[in-house]
Length: 280
Ligand SMILES: CCCCC/C=C/C(=O)SCCNC(=O)CCNC(=O)[C@H](O)C(C)(C)COP(=O)(O)OP(=O)(O)OC[C@H]1O[C@@H](n2cnc3c(N)ncnc32)[C@H](O)[C@@H]1OP(=O)(O)O
Image (cartoon, rainbow, N blue to C red; front, side, top):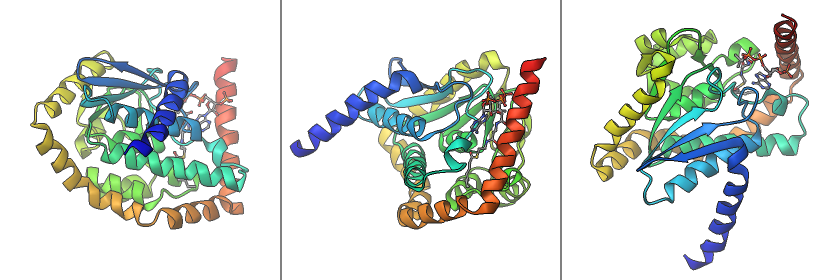
């Protein structure tokens, strides 16, 4: 135990040094608000993924903290999903580390004993949708924002564990449609299919998220934690037992000409859209 301490201290120190810029943590009485804070759109590069993982880990170690609300400093964007520039024309070593960071962050957030609620004020495609689905409940703002796993629309395929989390959240048939068609839905439709628990005006997202979190925290904690583990461990274990295989599959897939040209096209379309917006 004592021999682990320096490692933990080093990690905690690293978390403190990276956390303020990429992830902001605001502690309340017995829970924390964790705000993703990577401008402009919280796209998940390796450093942001690691910062999320470290933030959740540090909260797990804090005896006063029992839950967290996952949110964004940008009210228009929860997270734009994986940073496509990590996957486009990648260096293999970095690509492998990036995917490991994504796997770790998913496993951390999906299985954390903390009670977790996603407060989704803005868009939440792909990897952003995964982060939200990893939480115990989701509150999303009515109106424009969209959420969903849109990977197929980019010409790429989500890994089996993203599918599994969606199946666990909305069932097989809805996942088949959402994933196969690369659909994103608004909060109202999200609520109809069970992807979203509460659809509310944007100004109420945080208060409703807090209400849902307090409901989770009102349950005797060991019963809540054991039940969460009982519901989620099997899904998490499926990836844990295939971490290296999954990472190799991703790297091989990502480095194919087909995927590279799909990502090039998508990045160009995003850039064109951003330029058109700036010119207005
Ligand atoms: C190979 C197997 C992988 C399987 C798993 C993959 C999971 C993923 O998460 S893939 C990523 C999927 N994400 C998306 O499809 C979202 C793409 N982005 C958008 O739809 C929009 O940007 C938005 C709705 C999130 C925000 O729209 P808006 O506020 O209008 O902002 P802009 O579109 O102008 O974007 C600003 C700026 O950010 C760049 N950008 C946006 N998303 C990403 C991203 N995911 N990765 C990297 N960069 C992104 C965009 O290109 C703009 O850049 P600049 O032109 O340099 O300002």
